Image (cartoon, rainbow, N blue to C red; front, side, top):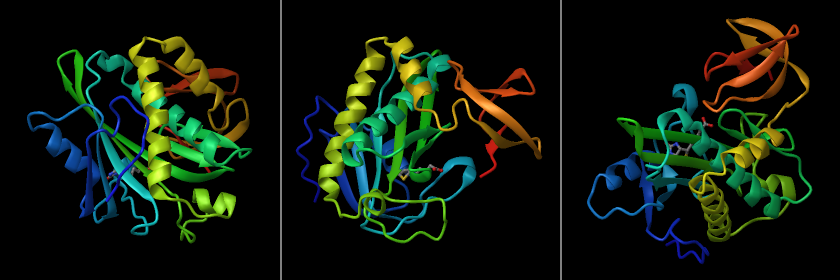
Amino acid sequence: MYKIPANTLFMGKQLVYVPECHSTNDEVQRLMQQKGSAEGMVVITANQTAGRGQRGSAWITEPGKNLTLSIGLKPNFLTPNFQFYLSMVVSLGLHDCLTRLVPGAALHIKWPNDFMVNDKKVCGILIENQLVGQRIERSVVGIGLNVNQQFFAWPHATSISLETARLYELNEVLSMLLESIEARYLQLKANEYGNIKIMYEHKLYGLNVLREFTVDQQTKAGIIKGVTDEGKLKVLIEDELHYFAFKEISYAY
Ligand code: BTN
């Protein structure tokens, strides 16, 4: 079904298309436990019936219109305290891909796992790592990228098509996406931690802008200043820098 011309070394070389599944993350998880599973393996589906999102939410998308896929990685060069760098390189890969597809748009990474085009969510990422001792043995990178969907119940969502007023071949978008993520992943493998963090922070949604957040069920005004290596969000609140882990803070839309 998916014959992709991706110009990659390993990302997507092993590609499994399933017309329908519960969650591509679960499929990759299962396949990676089998012998001979290759790094960069991709499972992609047209219809996910129990897609998972962040914070226990469901990921629901119109069948056949978007990219719903998971990539299996073996980042055993990465220690668990640097696992957020995986999220950084996947987000940067998305950024590079969307720069080609939606030139001139405002592209931002909304910490920790969303990607925004012109202030609306176009993509969600769900990364599930399996740690063995001090190493990340396996990582499943789940990506839901809205490509051709025209209508969303949620007013803060969009698709590439809605932003550009044209339709896309999913194959072509997939190839670009895999090429972009592979290039960024290889930067991580080459230990370019400093550059990756600088580039990631530069693309952060709301960087250096005063906005409202919800912390401990209270609304606070703060300014995002960056992230830590561990993936905590640095926010300046009343002249003091605070560090928030995932789930400790949310954006008040
Ligand atoms: C979020 O924004 O909450 C993250 C959404 C991640 C959705 C993708 S779709 C492919 C993969 N399989 C899943 O079950 N979830 C991820």
